[in-house]
Image (spheres, rainbow, N blue to C red):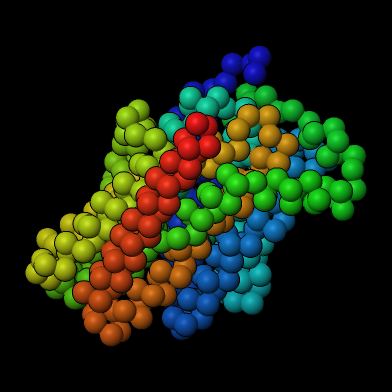
Length: 400
């Protein structure tokens, strides 16, 4: 690239900040508002679940982001659409059907926008900087979620509601000034002019590459999902922990833990290859999870559990982002598609492991959840490590 790029930390943080902002509005602020108006919890849970759907299926639309127009064009159009849709959703708080539809649309806009920017940065940032960028990607989503979880409800309660909703939605636009300083090539000339049929033929050939399939396997197995972070907030009573302490740990404590976990990764990547670091984090985190079974159910242990799980999860997220950006490579015409597909794959184990952990809790309490989460993660990491060793030996044997 001829043009000098902005600092890596700034690019990584602003690129993924919309995930943290929208996630806090969707997962924390709106549920608080709805609960205050006596909306039943099942209805709130359903609305939140629908809002999460774009995170899994957004990759189906992502190929469009690599076709016809510059990724800058897609990034700007989608983030503006996301801000408008979030603002409309906050104003539709009294109409659950409309609110659900608007949140789904906003979630899809954010998901595709993140894919457009992820593909854009993945294709222009040198490989040597992608580990640090992955760390700041994770820090943005975690830090943004933590800060906005506190700030969101404050803005809506302390200011006129419409003004607060507008300011909250404007936070989604914070990355826009960055786009003016990033070089953005037009879509690949061949991809821009070929038909959709030809386009998807080329796309499917790319997605069948061994490297892509290997990454998909890594991300869809429960190596380092740490799904327990999504249920710990509801287990305070099991540890005789007050609601206030649970709230403080879930906001301030988790934010600090997430930043520490994610920003430690670049230092570790100087000594350990990304794939092996991913497995190491997953294995060490699994042992930490299993070790909690031997500890008493006290507030101190609850704090240790929720902070520790989040440190490991944040570190795993940082490595995942680094791996995704590295797989994309530079000047990749399908960069946004690859980013979206691999990013969606990382969400899959979070979903099925949360369901499995919940079932295990019903049968064996918190110990059952710990055994299920830690045991399956350790088994997955061990299996993939053995396969990785076998693959390396196969490559060496073929070279002889």
